Image (tube, rainbow, N blue to C red; front, side, top):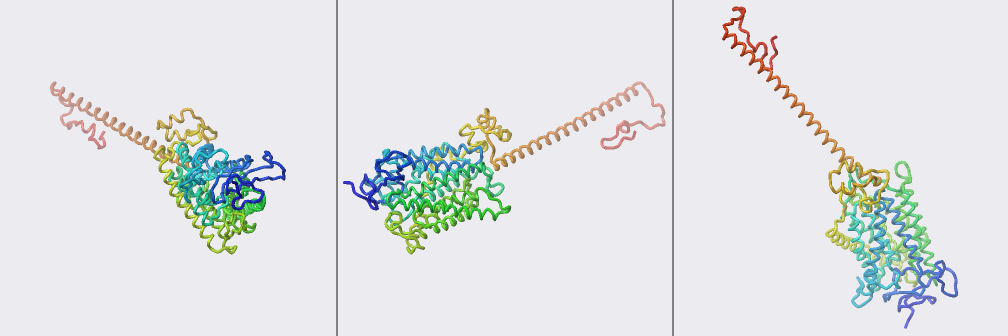
Length: 571
């Protein structure tokens, strides 16, 4: 028989025992409607019940899918704006691959790892529900959002084919910690860990995984030749547009993670929306103050974008459990943490083109810990699991559990990401060839040609390589270069120029030596001819008894006429 699950409200229906599935209506209606404006089912990402049965509903629409994929678009726009123009199509293609390949493996076995409750399932991983049926629509928006953080840190030098393999296997990275935090019987969930919309299980995990991936790839060519200063953005407008899309998507994601607006749930959904906006405002204020303290007092784009994103990451874990003033403080601290840690990756010489380490890794840690400080008990609604934060009189227990979640998720991300990329590297090298990186992934991987940058500088430096000639034979234009890449090319050209000048000088010296030798040889031959003529004359004179004109005159010596070599002539 069907029964109400834990926390099920009277107007909610359930098709699986122990799992509340709200039917959400934005307008009062006496009968179900298929209009996407009036009816919506939120993606049941966070399974509050412990039984672990799989939910379904009779009303299924695509509203949340559209909003989550819009969020994914925002990540793609943001990252494509951070990289060089010659790599922006490649980064967007990686985001597409994340959805396609990551969604496939999530459907195949990822859902099982997180929510499987068959015999053999443990608090660390699930079993069962492989190749989950289409009725269970949890097919990857959250997973895809996690993957985008990894693609950003690997931008501009990762082999596209190896990245496709990584996307297939990366389901393992996400789904196991998701079991711990959200899955039925997960050990962190059983301890009371709170992560409503994924500060830890999505953002911290993705940020740490991306950091390890960037470390294994190594920095882009020439990235740190002129110091660790941030590189110029390829398209700042895309970064700002991406921020706006993410802003909108974050509202839907955080409020949607409350699982409904029916009964009392609408209060928590509304609170999640308001706290999300308030937190982002706090992050923006901190970013504005930070950028104005720089020389010139200019509003630099990433000084505003990243603190806002850091604030959004920080509010995500407890978005439905904060008051507005708490949300402002959480957002401001989140933005400040991002700015303080923005140079960490570069200090460690780990090239993170999009700043995911500061925003998602450090921001995710703060998001989990903030719950242990500011969370308020929801009085049985199912979000706080009966716990309160330190500043709400709950003591240190929840803070300790949240800290433990940070450690567990971080260690898992480091170990499993390293193993997967090590295996992938044995199959296909994860790093692009240097000439491919200089030419740009858009052209090398996708044959996308762009204006305003030619390939002649590359060919002048590397044109002797057959691989370069094969790739660039039919290319006329490929896109503007990364400034660091330009520095590499200029250095190679300069070295080539020095070598050419040295060869020219050597050739000129050889010619001068040869000319001197030829002149010396000609002079030697002329002297020999004169000596031979003189000897012939003397022999002729002696044979014919021809005496000198004046017996008193001294004998004329040919040396007096020619002179000794190296001595001035007498005549």
